[in-house]
Length: 189
View 1: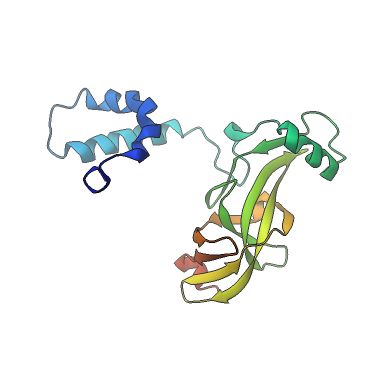
View 2: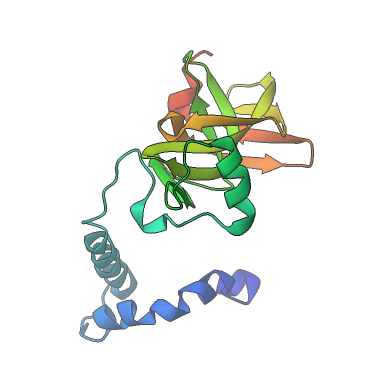
């Protein structure tokens, strides 16, 4: 990346984590496969740090927080039964088949078992129930590995458990092309 673009922009956000790398780099004396060995040590350290994280189909506990002032009012109107101040919590990520974050495009299976493409707008916990607000996209055409969808503003409230996985996509203002993973391409829907 440095040779091709003359900068390592992707590394700027990780500069503050230099201590993790220094922890494993300072004691290395053998420089054979130095980069690979160092990467293995750092990856192992990071995975070990995640060991205590509960990876269920629920909101990531480390990400929950009270809704912002702008979001609190519409959520209270949507859920009038949640009158207590801490009855609604929001989150930026949820665990499904991987992490699905706010702003991601993901597969979602509705109550009838139909798979849809949605854009995740908000994750929340309301009185112990995990919900997500999504924008449902309309299927325009389907190929072998790519689906074309019309970007829609049609909002829907779904259970967070219905989200399946984040997708790779290319988007314009009105449409998007979704790269369908091979395991979902065989479904024949």
